[in-house]
Length: 606
View (cartoon, rainbow, N blue to C red):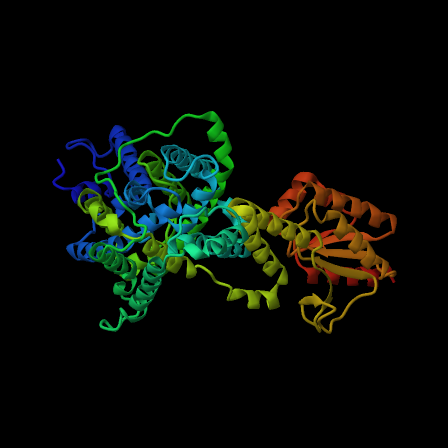
């Protein structure tokens, strides 16, 4: 028998032991030992938290305990605020911190990554589910659970199909534009609650701001004062909370939301202020619920679920990579897909909404000294205590303070600092950034993201369809060849070396062929064309047919086509297709070897 969980985990990681008294050379013993070892490795691979238990010390727990409690203090008011942003009751935000966070703590591959409610996911839920049901209704909750489950399915499909790399289609300018646009949308959507108004927050920014201006006469001075004081309070704690500790990254600087929530709640209760507040929040843990089986809804929600899943994984993986770099760990992307999908399954079954990795919470967890995933389990315990005994305290928590908490959180997401550098480096990225941003603002989060991703792919195809091509010459008497337009080089009139700086594929095959023929036209004495393939890593069928066609067209001009510096995988492709035998020229290991052979051929011809 195992004496403890730690002993059980240690046995999982240790080499398998055979039966007592079994012969050392017994093949059955060896097979059983190998099978047991494989099983243990599989378990620890899919349940990474088991790898930390054998070496887990009391000192580790003390650090995780403090970090988990600090994380809980920050998470509670933020979770409630994000729930209202998503159009859900306060408890749904707290539910999103229970099963999802606990599941990811057990299954996630990164020790300090925190998964839970995030502002962008909340905004996307509101934009999607709000089309089918009024906010805070039972129907709204049911549709949200369907969306959660579909997000889980999408993430697990990406894991099974090993398609985690699909997120690379979302380039940095697309992600930056999306985050900026979503942050601005969130900020504008919080202005009515900040001003004490109960008006429709749907539509683009122009429509929302128009409604806000029309209702200016109904602004609540008390709500504005509470909201303004809350923003000032969060800022003051973040700015000056570290002074007693002498550490600007001290966890105390992140407790502003909880402190202003407590003060605002006390003010509303003690002075009986006439402002909109959270009201009754049911106590107790969530019930296990199953999403309704409505085929029409499932089909209608699928596109939004795909977008939310992609955004959630990009956000989660980016944060995990940053934390792993600090800790010199490795992020297991397939495992993160599995863990994030399971977290969203937990959200679907417990009345929550889609979750993702949170940069704010993960940073707090790291700066508070968390060493393992146990800190998240401590945070979950704090949320459970809140749900069981502390929910009556939310009755007087004003919406203006929650709006202020959201505003402060999303303002830090808005970042245009890189646009100036991008403008000087590659202006097309600035265009993609701004196109995505305005797409999010006026087409919605899904439309804006699709527009930006489409623009980035179109830009990539445009760039690769007309690649850089350089005529090469020898540098002095060396073996190095460089662009004749940039360097003082030596060339041969009867042989031209040309380097194509792109893979050969359907999008650029015809353009490359035409430009190579143009280069030969400008070198009428040339009898040899050496195609330098050092930058070519892949050739599709269109590229292969182009080379065959080029070879025939050059033969008609009495010009031989040679290849040099062909990479191994490309050479293997040529071998399978028989191109090497079809060439009118030869395949050389280096460009220097090719040009020396051309020089010798010229001497032989004379």
